[in-house]
Image 1 (cartoon, rainbow, N blue to C red):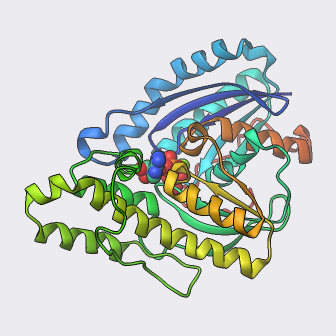
Image 2: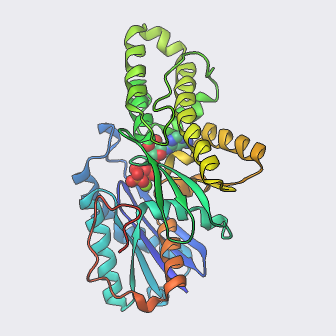
Length: 337
Ligand SMILES: Nc1ncnc2c1ncn2[C@@H]1O[C@H](COP(=O)(O)OP(=O)(O)OP(=O)(O)O)[C@@H](O)[C@H]1O
Ligand SMILES: [Mg+2]
């Protein structure tokens, strides 16, 4: 079974080819058009997807060694995400499905981030708790069985990735800031500044207070001091973000008595977060999974894998060429198509 995955929910134009559960290729164009703005401009992003998709598809097919005629099914992200971006991906996928007479499987982007874990660990058992931490989402999810997603905690304001990107901008470190802050923090002292940890005693998260605390802290310092101590400030900030995330994750693991914990989404590439969860999992003797960095941020391999697992469960006759699929920008994880 060969599945083509298509992803365009934000600023990554991505196509992947999967065969029998193994990823053969992933071609991704991360749009550089947004860097000078310090954030993604939706209209620019959707237009860029439109111009990049043909070349990205060709590369994914060439790298996989497969031809369009060999594709058995197509999976496409239909939400959540930026509506214009989703529309481009969905309609590109519909055109392909129609011209090849193949079924089109609608994929939830957040379910795909979670399913990215199965690319390298196909045997992950239920039940588990997954912490989804990305640019737009921070969610704690209890997954008792296949396809059942119970939202048990979420951010009340900013997503963790959004907060990291905004603080990176305040520190003059560039966009997106996650990897830069991660690398810088490795050289810094996490105890240099005591930044707050938000929303204690709850499974919900809050990052806007931390963002404001960093802003006020920076306003009180001389530019020279900030420059000299940038690694220490970054490390202190990252320690606060990851403490907030893990405090809730560990509380959820105890509450739901699961033996397996997963990370998903772009921020799950973070080395401090991974280390804190790995230490906890080691101590409690529970299983811990996370995707390789290339499968943490947006990519079509996770979309192809999600579509493949859906087809394996329900058979491809469940899906048609997708004429009833539309972009759903605020799609919830628990919503069924
Ligand atoms: N090593 C890292 N440490 C911390 N954050 C990181 C790291 N690598 C990437 N990120 C962050 O991950 C985020 C991007 O993740 P992702 O691509 O999953 O988000 P998105 O697709 O924009 O949002 P969503 O999936 O919620 O729609 C950015 O905020 C980026 O800064
Ligand atoms: Mg994403």
